[in-house]
Length: 302
Image (cartoon, rainbow, N blue to C red; front, side, top):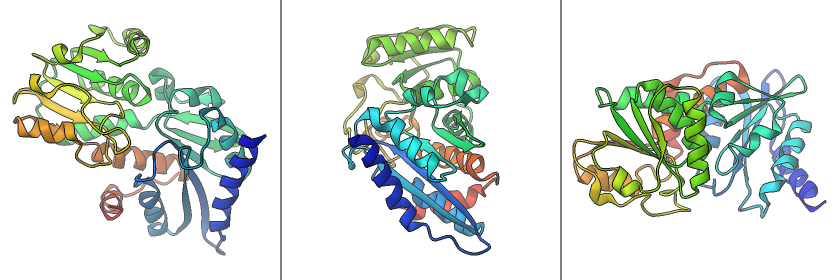
């Protein structure tokens, strides 16, 4: 009962912010995760909604700050849906478990095995994944001409699964996956092999695996303000490699800073954050936002 009451309280607090304006389209959206206080998504979504003439409210449901258990996710979704939310973005650590709380999945979300966006529509909860699109487009724009022979992926959670699909879609020939929970990296490798006919392996030694690879992507939470530090020893990186990180708060993680100092080309999480948000905004509203405006909102949120 505690979780039900707490979930309702959080949703009701959001509703108090929402005073519908005559003749203005009203949109309610939530962000569900842990340690999401620094997230720029609320400002970015709300600013673009206002620019397009909407009464747009995007609320954080930080399970850490609200002292909620992981198991309370279902109740928060129920409360939000009943309150008339258009949907919710899902972030760490719920992207995989949230699949079981949807009624159906988009083709991308089903293939990836993770959702970061749930749309409430006509009594359904439709799970989508905009992370893979966001990473792929950011990579194309920033790391033009990067070598795609081999890469190491750090993190096999929901974000890692989306990035893995993006990397293989970009043309990576050989992918190694490391996660501290070996069962997760093995499961992800198995899923990927069912979709891509390429060498894909779960590995247990990221520091050794990093040697000789073309690129490295951190899709683990290591580097976030809540989880500071490095996801692998830095000494095996060399200047011919590219290094990407999907963490965007802080905008430059220790991994990216140290990799750049060693001469590596780097890709931060900002581009992915903006592009996945733009795709989610369109799913919630049916209107494609302006990417330049979304980028400006993102920077203004800092």
